Amino acid sequence: MAEMITNGVQDDLNGKYMTFYIEDTVYGIELFHVMEIIQVVAITPVPNVPDYISGIINLRGKIVPVINVRVKFGQPAKEFDDKTCIIVIEIEGFRVGLIVDGVSEVATISNGQLADPPEHVASGGQQYLQSIANVGGRVILNIDCNRFFQSDLIAAGSFER
Image (cartoon, rainbow, N blue to C red; front, top):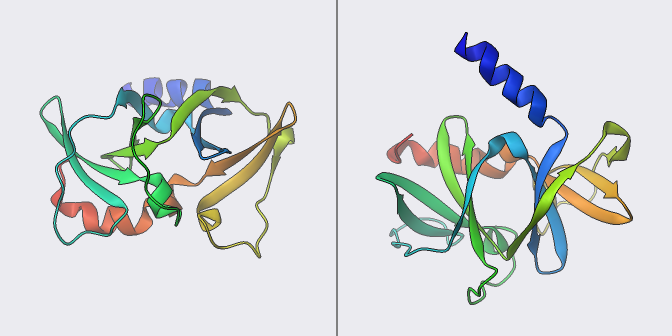
């Protein structure tokens, strides 16, 4: 029964993407992965992790690793401002926070608006793309969460689910 309810919710969220900014580029994540959006809180650094992992936060008693999306995409880190936030997502049972420059909106994207990313582009985060959407003349780069977190999920065994 719970699986039927979960599948129904996921069906309702199909085609919906949480969009966010890194610099002037708009990215999207399938909305069913998004748990919540929070302001940046105190992040505890963790030694011997990749530089794009900013550390961990305590989110209502759960330890959540936090990834700086800018740095993971090969861009320099920048000072947080009032638009910087953390998108908490769940992927394969793990909660992970994504530090982004700002959240935009929830976009509904039909299959006709989606295109495959170019195969020859594989730097600056493009290797993590699932699709590219053209919505109202605006390009949205949709992230494939499984690819984006593939190496992190393997290393995340020490974090709570």
